[in-house]
Length: 450
Ligand code: NAP
Image (cartoon, rainbow, N blue to C red; front, side, top):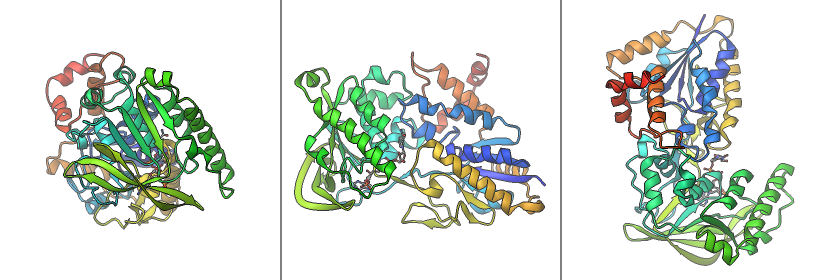
């Protein structure tokens, strides 16, 4: 019997799961997405100047066009139908909702205006409809980004790149203009531990040394931290390579460099945030110098204050809560055992594992979910639920305006057609604008272009 499968979320983990299920055989798969646009993190999380990473969406396109798959964009669980209703309609529900919320920065003053988590800030410059009206205050020379991961690197780079460097990106028009017009001269990357513990990928770290108007600054004293013997071979290699790149940065601090590249990305290791200073608005970040003992952070009592008008904690993410789905609050993900949450309910990607790993890491989750489903539904067990027909009739009854894949293609084409020279697209940043395009005659005009 054909298995009726709903995948909630059309980011990489949702698409990888759909792909794995396609290979499994007899399944009809519906991708349910709360935005009209698919691809999740690829569109809204991956840095706008990293277009090569975004190219993976081309393979997802092939998956989306496979016969057993249908796309239901602009349909939100909790708004348009409940989780209970969804599970009633489908034999299998796979949650692939990612980890779209910021981990909170738990220090005094973190609620001040001008403290903006990386999920919101990255969403804003990527034109995510949730954040198009964020309007961050960029009116200061220094910005502090807390965290030593790849997201922190992405943010720092986007803040100091020139408009010419960003011209080939798909940064939202509004964000691109606001950053270009800002007085930002320095971005501090604050690491509570040392360069050995930093979670930077080499490629992204190295990129910081080849920006047009900004140079990386590293205090050579911070690089004296020995690599601890307890590290695995792999972690040791990563630490050695990152140290080599950072040493290279530390040696290039000449006056000529400073003149040709007036902006700075300052790597400040061994400092943890203690308090956000200011009135209603941020005026600085109070930090404490640290040392690392057996991998653990220890405060030294020595305080430093970094004056700044914007603090961006890039300290990790957590998933959303869905009524009826058990949640592990400490880890910020759904409670699951190898991707199984409950009978007929599975999860993949960051909502299963937590927010670690690159795009391709979710591929294995899809394979694992497909295998678990095959095991759980052997010998014709399951099947028989209404699936897609039931969903369509429920959505019609509620007058929910869903966006199918063909309609997404209209939005996609319109964005590409509106792109500035060199840029891949000009994004719609509100759902209303996307839906308006589909409703009016522009749709036919864009379709006629091919
Ligand atoms: P991440 O790699 O886990 O880094 C989080 C950083 O925040 C760590 O340096 C962590 O320090 C620090 N941190 C956590 N809590 C803190 C606190 N209370 N105070 C100060 N610092 C704190 O997370 P991410 O950068 O959000 O990245 C998420 C995942 O996406 C990662 O796997 C990343 O590699 C991936 N990603 C990849 C790319 C790429 O490949 N180009 C781009 C973006 C993201 P400790 O280590 O001390 O905990």
